[in-house]
Image 1 (cartoon, rainbow, N blue to C red):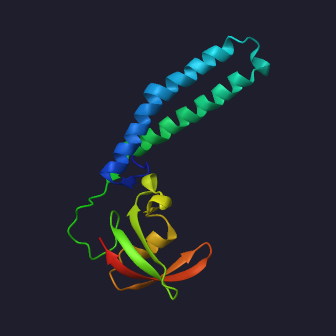
Image 2: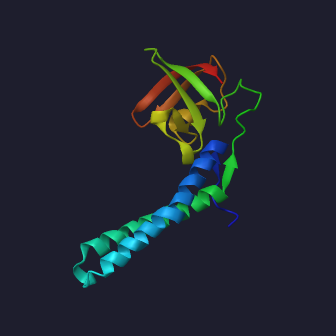
Image 3: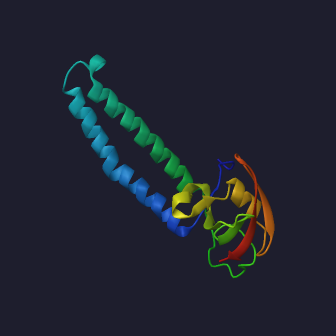
Length: 158
């Protein structure tokens, strides 16, 4: 399994995944098994929608557990306290403006496992993060997005 994908993330992001994994294993898995048991008691399984629904939920939960186990096992913790804040990299928060209209935005660049754009965290695999990584304050950066090309200017890195 040496070729498994690595998942860069913050320590807090890893803890969040571990918490979800623990919940799925200790609570959700038991709930689904109980639903299956109750649905089986209704008799004929060929036309038992409760049973089918519970089995689908079970498949989802087991798939999510497998995914989370892989992500936690292959987590690479980002050093957020690195002293060099002059270069955009994983774990930094970047403030930039869109050129020429000047919309100011700030995002923290994190691994895909903990990305949540609505919470201000974008994946290092996203077009905008890929374009900014390795850049410095004051640089203008062209970003190729699915909606076309845009240009941004990096204002600060923290």
